[in-house]
Length: 197
Image: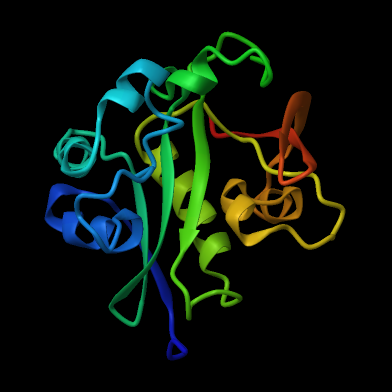
C-alpha cells in the first residue's frame, strides 16, 4: 500500500522515460502490449510495431517538444499515467465515426488513465486528469475533451476503466458536449469537454 502524501503530476519527458516504462511497459520486454499507442496511431502503424519497437516509439514521443502525456508521483514514486495530446495527433479520435467532432476547434484529448496497483482509490486518476488539463492549457489548447464511460455510479471493470468515468470528468469541471456511439466495458461513452480559453 502506498504511503499517504501529495500527488504531483509532471509531463512525461525523456528524462522521465523510465517512469513511463514502469507504468506502461510489460514485464517481458519482448511482449507486444499497448504502451498507450493503440489510440494514438493508425491501425496499420500500431500493428507494425512489435515488442521493443513499441518501447522505442514511446521513448521518441517523450523526446518531442510536447510529451505524450503526464505522470503522477506520490511521495516521489511514480504511480500513474494519463495520455493527453491534440486530438489531431490521436489518429483513432481524429478520424472516429463513433466519437463526434463538436466543432472545428483544435481541441486536445485525454483518453487513457493507468494507476499502479497499490495506489488505487487514492485520488491518483483525478490528479492525473487535473494535471492533463493544466498540461493542455500550458500548451495553448483552446479546449480539452475526454471520452469516459457514463456508468451512473456502477462498478466499471478495471481493464476497461482506463477511459475514466463521467463523474471523474465532472469533478474536473468538464461538461457533456455530445453523445457518442462508443461503448467501453458495457457502458456508453460520453464526450466531455472543458473550455480553456
